[in-house]
Amino acid sequence: MLLTGAEIIIECLKEQGVDVVFGYPGGSILNVYDALYRHRDEIFHVLTSHEQGAAHAADGYARATGKVGVCLATSGPGATNLVTGIATAYMDSVPVVAITCNVTLPLLGKDSFQEVDIAGVTMPITKHGYIVKDVNILADTLRRAFRIARSGRPGPVLVDVTKDVTAAACEYTKKAPEPIRREGHYTQADIDAALELIAAAKKPYIYLGGGAILSGASPEVREFAKKLDAPVCDTLMGKGAYDGYDPLYTGMIGMHGTKTSNLGVSECDLLVALGARFSDRVTGNTKLFARNAKILQIDIDPAEINKNVRVDVAVVGDLKEVLPKLTAAMGQAEHPEWTAHIRELKQRYPLKYDKSQLSCPYIIEELDRITKGSAVISTDVGQHQMWAAQYYHYTKPRTFLSSGGLGTMGYGLGACIGAKMGCPDKVCVNIAGDGCFRMNLNELATASRYQIPIIQIVINNHVLGMVRQWQTLFYGKRYSQTVLEDQVDFCKVAEGLGCAAIRVTKKEEVGPAIEKAISMGRPVVIDCLIPKDDKVFPMVPAGAAIDEVFDGDDLKEEKNEQSV
Image (tube, rainbow, N blue to C red):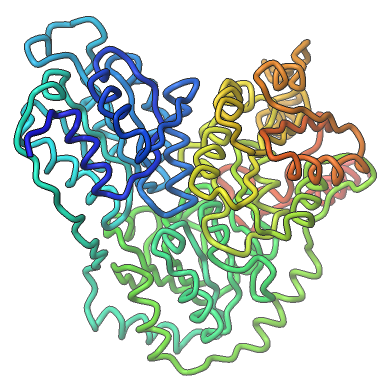
């Protein structure tokens, strides 16, 4: 059938099963929006307040559903406003297809109005980028974009289309999407070497990353952990891959990981890294990381092998395929002394906070209690992000959405909107500090426009909390530009943007506020006023070994020793 380029874009989206997109129109992409209007009953378009919000919403949709998220933007500033969201998705391996439209072909390269080489701009932060100058290759280019976004290690792909291509016509034939085969490059010898390490281990530890979620391998991870009889820790991206209530689970590892995980990994004789890339926030000083252990790494991306930490054995493959082979070939391991030691560490070093006053950990625990760990939680970046990782018990994958690699302030609200569009039956909550919330709070208007019933919890301490924490501990309490004592009233802002608002100043108000917000069926902001000097503990200083982890009690003890 003969279709215009704009109509082909819509038909290709339908081919791929896309039923919701996020975006913002403009001159160069008008033909696409005109075609979208005619298919508005098949593809729902969410008009965000800013293109960055559209990119984050597509990202949140993808993380929560496992599908490819789609965002649309026009040329020039519309396209460049997507960049932070694309980079966020790239760093965390999130499948997103960003479709932009550029000036017409005769105007390319002439500094035309709203012309930007967006494919060039985003080259380092996408799996692949295209600029389509011929309508005859448009359909196949879009199909390749979706295939690339989903295959292997997932990630964002950009397709830029000149405006004249969206107006030109050519013959279109519908095609079903090709199945994705996430094959690895491992051999039986790799499997045998892994089994040899596993059999020799007396003190094994499992370290989970985001790949355990992306591969859909949570059931396989849990079976493997039971067969290995090993404690399990996770990264920020790995939250939910393993049940947060399971006795073998020891919490997050790294800069703000639990003492149990950090000390346990430092003592183990085998570290099994599943879908994890040994980020600097996990390893601390790489020369001292897991220094007593052999390391087995299983990952789909060969580029991650020996990139940050040297490993003893690597299996390059999909966890969902590799783990069952290992589990089936293993005997039932038993490490009673080792697991008893880890249980003793958990009892000796529990997470704790000041329970005498309103605090973020208390708010997170109340949210966990009320939602029974079943909500989809998105966060921005900072202290609240770490508290959300520490104090909420994630029992299922795709329930924790956070910018791990890029650390994008302003990510969470758009992501929460995207998650709710993809998971309408789940309670979706964004947790943001007041500093982060300011960056993209305009997306409250998006939530109210469509009456998307998300809950926005603002952890309001009137400071840039994480930066202030570093200034307190390492910069002599010189609070340079981290104090937000001003006249902004988030409740009034929320109401002005069409949302309900609740202010919380006492512990006893937290539970009722959350329950009320869930029952209201509309977007709600809960503004929680907490002390400005609360700190996230435990903590590992930058560049230190992870077994140098300390908490508030350690600081008090050190201060007492210095005063003697």
